[in-house]
Image (cartoon, rainbow, N blue to C red; front, side, top):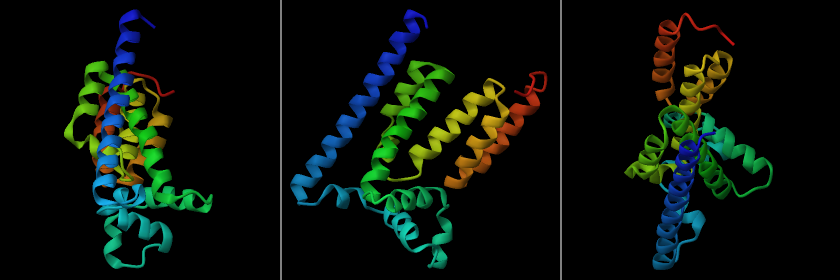
Length: 186
């Protein structure tokens, strides 16, 4: 690893830590100003739907809009006796770090840091599909660039289990396969 690469990796780690600290600070402010618990702060909007599906399955016909990947992960945490929302939020932090690492490998520290600093980064710190989808999709792309097609297939499948956007990823990866036809399948 070159000195420049190490410096870039350090910058990505610092940026990830800073954004996580900032988002935790916002959550703490909301908790102290409203009296809400961390679980209540994290269980908003779509999280409620995913949590209901994780606990009760797809009972409401409208729930089919939510793909099964995240509810399965949440149900897994629940089956281990862990607090579902908090466990999923912690896992989301790990997934956002993995996504940033993939971006660093694809396009360097600037790309990873810009992604971490984008306004939508708030959705990578809560129990939403975004951090898990981004980790799977970015790593699928990175593995595709390196001709690791069996790994690409697994990662793209995970992405498709999380969001409809996974289908667009598969289409783009298909184009990558065609344009990299000279590279051997590993």
